[in-house]
Length: 271
Image (spheres, rainbow, N blue to C red):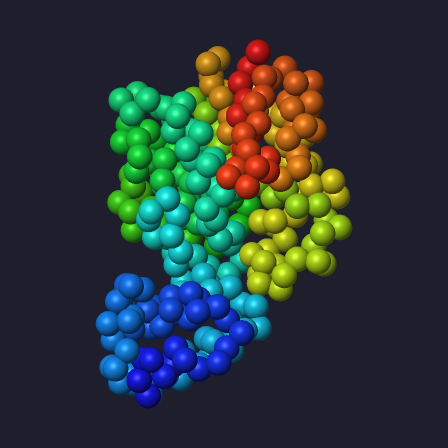
């Protein structure tokens, strides 16, 4: 069967997803697929494509099928059960980078490292930075280790399995960053099947959705240098309540909206 015949097969999956899938199986860039329309594919590639297409149509994430996804212009390995990098999270990285001069030595800490895309991107953008990071899930820490080696920053990223600040007790940082779970428990059942595969641990932030931030606000002060700051991704409607939570614990907080006009990042510092 030819490449063009595979692409033309009727499917509920979007053309873009089919192009990405086929490019991955042919080991070419997505833009090169249309240069190969008359190429005959092997039986093995054809069968893999059809199996993967069926999974896509059932709602299985394309990212997990590919085993990788791009974030901030770089490719990261991904794995089922670990949060998939999303473009909205790039705003979180941008806000941290704005606060970190390129020539300044700094030490940061990330809670819930996942694929490692946040810490690794920061390390690649700031050569004098050192990052510590943890995650509740051992498989996430192993995945972050893989991505750190892939991007050659493993000597500046120190990973631990653990809960929130537990693995870094007694340490202080120039900043703390996190993309924590912030979806309320009541929304779990309504999430798409593919999203659920990222795991409750990665997505659900408790009954209210903002329990992480309440706990974080009480603890983060002990782990920040005097002029330190924190940057957190937040739910689309959580800005106002989080401003109040951090204010009650003695922090100034600023909310940033994403390109869709929704609450996305909170930046905070000691008053």
